[in-house]
Structures are given as structure tokens and as C-alpha cells.
Length: 220
Image (cartoon, rainbow, N blue to C red):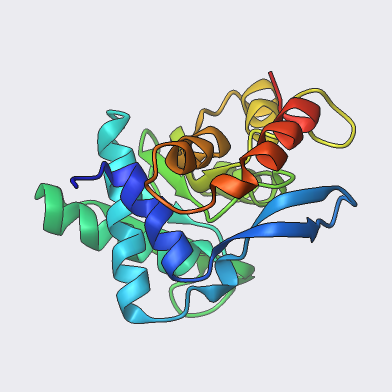
């Protein structure tokens, strides 16, 4: 059976113990029927594949940029892997950089390591997941301080499409409303549900709980 890159990614998450089904208490206090633990990514092979899925998402959404920005710390290896995969799979050479937690006042100095940003540069922010939008709020002022860049989008691995605790909007929708930035995900909760329905991954016994959770907490 030939799978789409989205279906392959869901299978990849399951096989690496990143996507699990059952009953999980989230930080928000909600009881969720699935859990995503990106901490289970820890090998070079996994990182190489992750970069390919991120690169495919960028290509699939027609995004064009000069530089990938990986917010410290989780975004650092992801931005590097995505830049490599973009060159390897699509023959596109793209820069990458990542922020320092504190500005360096000696040597080359600056807030960023890697490509030094310039006015008019188009950038894509690379992150693992978006829960509250904290990483975006922290990186944007640093980008603005470095140069007048244009953020053409942000890429994350999974969009839970779940309402925030204090809003009817999801974190992705809030990012668009607050910052005007489009956030693209390799897959969404709906993609995961469809993968179960279509037999791409096992877990049909979890579908009732997945449907219920989406009906209660899913953002419109």
C-alpha cells in the first residue's frame, strides 16, 4: 500500500512510540485519548526522517523562504534536519539559524547562530508542537531586533486543533489572530483519526473516545 507523506508520518510516530493511544491526563487537566511525546525522538535516523516530513510540508503548502529559524532548543535540530532534507529531496538550498538564549557580546556577537538575518529576508519558523504559542512569542521579538524579516509561516509536527483553556480558538488559530502568522502542521488530529478509520494504523477501538474528545474540545 502506498501512503501519503502525512500517513507515513503518523505511522512513523506510532512506530517510534511518539503517538500513543489510551487515557492520558494532560497538563491542562483534560483527559485525552491520545498523547504525543516528542521526547521519544532521539536518534539520527529519526531526525533525518523528521526533516523529510517537515520539508514535505513546506513543499506541499507552496511556501518559499530564504531561511529556516529554529527556536532554541527543540527547534534547533529540526531546522537543521529540514534544511538538509530540503536540499536532498527538492534540490533547494536554504539557510538556517537559531537563537541564543542570551545575546553574545564578544566574537561574532548577535542573537542568532547560523545565517545572519537581513532586511527583507523571508523566514519560516520550525518547531515541534504548539501548545500555548510561547515559543512564537519569544522568537518574534528576537527576529524583529535582528532585521526586518518577513515570516512566511511556521511549521509544527501536529496540530491538535484543540481549544485553549481560555478561548474557543486553538493555539494555531490564536497565532494567526494575534500575530498574523499562518501555522502549518505536518498532520492534524483529524488526519490521525482518518488514519485509524482507513486502517493506516491500528486503533479502531479508540475511535469513540477520539470522536468524543474532538466534539468536546475541538476548535471550530
